Length: 205
Image (cartoon, rainbow, N blue to C red; front, side, top):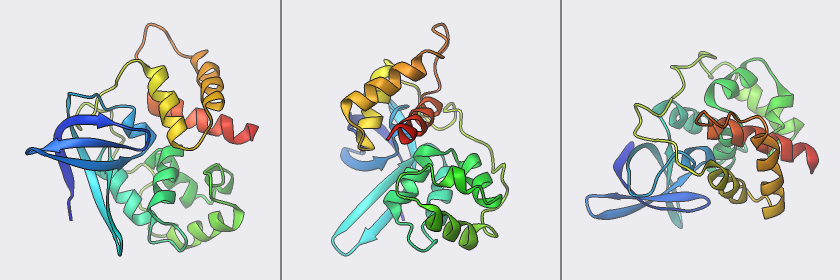
């Protein structure tokens, strides 16, 4: 298994990045929150998980090892594939996702596109006793993972929302709403803004 990659970010797209390692460009599928912290031309380390299918090999990338471990655990639940697991981590950070599963918070779980009430109940039943500490090992701030914030954050947030399937207008409207609460003198937490935007758009659909 490819546990991690470290190299120069060569390209960014709505649903992944290309990281150049030893002269080879590796395509890595990332959640919007992870993509929003990458900068083209800068070095980054991504924890990774290789998903093997009969017709494909897909490398998924994460800001830290904890996120990758939870991604792999989520897929052990019936009906949860890599795409849905990645979406769950795009909507909720690892700590919040663990809390939702451990406490049977179905309302939080059904905020994830693709998860209904029955799906949320199944995930809780199958993973509640295996989810581990709600606090987890701590959330990454980006300083130790080689993943750094990138400006302009508005563009990164809009591209991330587009990568999740929202229209350009929906993305623009959501960015404007969350921007109202951003301190202009501080670096915004793009991941938190992304989660808020997804929740906002989920309520308006």
